[in-house]
Image 1: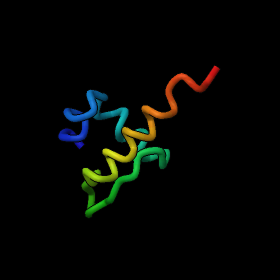
Image 2: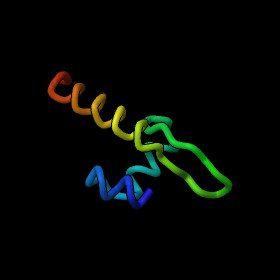
Image 3: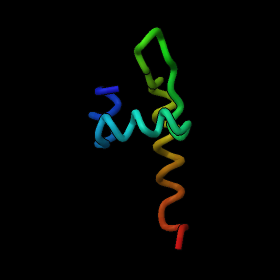
Image 4: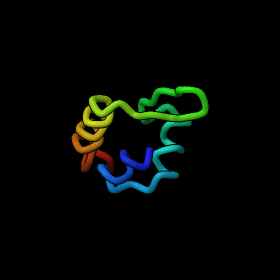
Length: 55
């Protein structure tokens, strides 16, 4: 998750929160939470497309 935080610029705790809420697609391996790079890229693209539409 720390690598994903470095890539996105978001705080690690924000990524964990979005994972718990189901907003960010993650995979649990034991007690570890992982984000696939392809899923992260797709999620970031989706987030960027949604900007500016809410008012």
